[in-house]
Length: 344
Image (tube, helix red, strand yellow):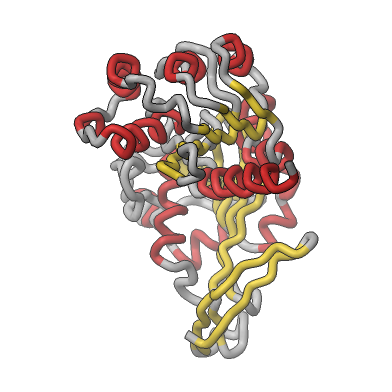
């Protein structure tokens, strides 16, 4: 029994880690990942919900696993969630009956932009469905599965599953979610030139493409003159859209220069912000340093810190770049995160 439980937790842990790769990119939907495992414990597929309005994690995982089990690749031509649902309903031939499904959130039971995943699973009848966190709003998915004779085990790594839902729940509760993003080097420097790697920068631009606005300080605006666009975003987040911009300042005499790079993007609002009451509903990103976080911490719901494995010779002094390291392992120990580094 203990060995079986360990296996369940390890597989659910993989799902949770995968879902975090899409955290905040799915808003106003939650980040969710799903996995299909065959009777021998082989992982056939793992997928995540990627963007609001797109196919849910369970559907994408079932789509991929169907190819492995049937050898039929025709399903891969389908992109719309309704089409994938219909294909699986008509062609499953009970090939999932010996499979287990892992999903970080209770399968949905409502018709929205996509059909309900719980009803699809009830039709496909996998052997067992493992769930991390229960639904908080559109409940009933577990009951549908059990009524169909499917074994359901819920609460696998429940606390981690609930942590994954924090941005979604915050947006539901407050109608607003504010994320503070800071990029820094190992020595704490966040001012000396470009810091983030290409993939980290791409993730930031993906987040921007889903945000209603980006907020920066007046000093960042004047010193860096950023564009604050989404030019490095990857599919399906690449877009000509640029979020609105808020310049955080209490300097009532400050005037915006229309020649700044933030005005290169059309159809965006740019304004001065000095009160949290001025933030509208939706997803907002604050990009800045420790001083800005200290000043406006009461606004912030979550913080994401990008840590570059690099150093400058003397942080904050404008000295030359010292070097970059390579991360060989990242380890959580208590409340700390340990980075194991070697010379790059």
